[in-house]
Image (cartoon, rainbow, N blue to C red; front, side, top):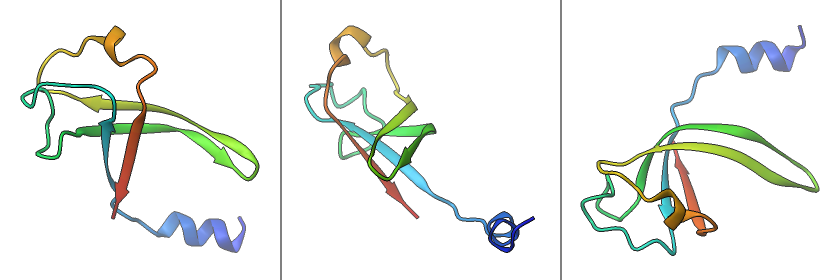
Length: 81
């Protein structure tokens, strides 16, 4: 095992994320946060130098969301630690 891998395995960081659908006019009751964003439950994907980011995001809403209404909607994904 490499020295970097051993160090990475022993390091833990709590990161939270929120998702804001920029062009989606959701009723305030649909979003789970005061700023109109949704809580992110899971992020899977990959990124790299000179390649596009590719992520699959699972987020939560307090009410049903019309999936067809959010197709091709610009989104902002915010991370904080």
